[in-house]
Length: 244
Ligand SMILES: NC(=O)C1=CN([C@@H]2O[C@H](COP(=O)(O)OP(=O)(O)OC[C@H]3O[C@@H](n4cnc5c(N)ncnc54)[C@H](O)[C@@H]3O)[C@@H](O)[C@H]2O)C=CC1
Ligand SMILES: O=C(O)c1cccc(O)c1O
Image (cartoon, helix red, strand yellow):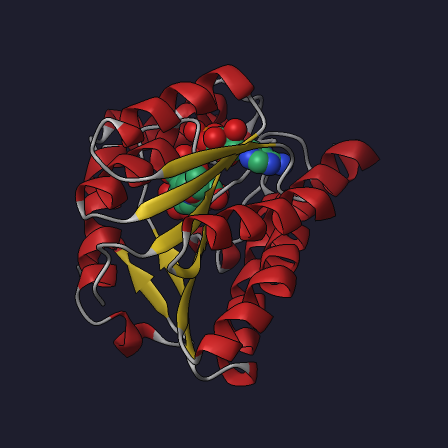
């Protein structure tokens, strides 16, 4: 897929994998609508992306709010060449067993991974279908298939997010829709995992001790290689960091 001149929406762009993806996509020539909740960090990433010579627009807000998704699609259409989205925003809340999470934490995890994915599809897919093509990437996780003490809501939300992607792939075959599983990546989410209480912290500490963490730049480059190549081979499937 040619990325130059195409406009993509990217959620969770203020740090970690999202920030690295924004920069790598810009290097590949893509214009970007960047979303995150923290205005200062997002504006900073947006300036860095613009410095790479592409058009970029920051949309500050919760990706799980209807207005955020609606505005992001509008902003992408104003830039022109709207080609789709990468839903990367995520939150883990590591540590508590499922029944120890607050209702607000549970809702936040499902809203960020699942509802935000639904809203992006709700506003992007009708446009992309009219154009007859597009790309939708859901940043997924091995957690969707591997129950562990201390990440129950997260894993359940990731499983639901994967399912949204697989179902959309059937509902809109003309839009290439895939899950990207980024590997175990050295980000704030990993740091929160290591600092958590209970068994999950040992797992995350082990990732670091065993040298299993990859850098956000590596996993971003791998996804952009997939997108710039033949993303269609992963339609309705999970592409992993190693596939690139
Ligand atoms: N770091 C890892 O080892 C792995 C990460 N992932 C997934 O990769 C994605 C990115 O994670 P990381 O960069 O590691 O995490 P991170 O915590 O460093 O960054 C998450 C990003 O999402 C944003 N965000 C969170 N809630 C949001 C909301 N409601 N609306 C808009 N933005 C929101 C944050 O502001 C931040 O920009 C997530 O979907 C995560 O589940 C999947 C597998 C492994
Ligand atoms: O599988 C992992 O290593 C992992 C770690 C943190 C967060 C995740 O989603 C993961 O899948």
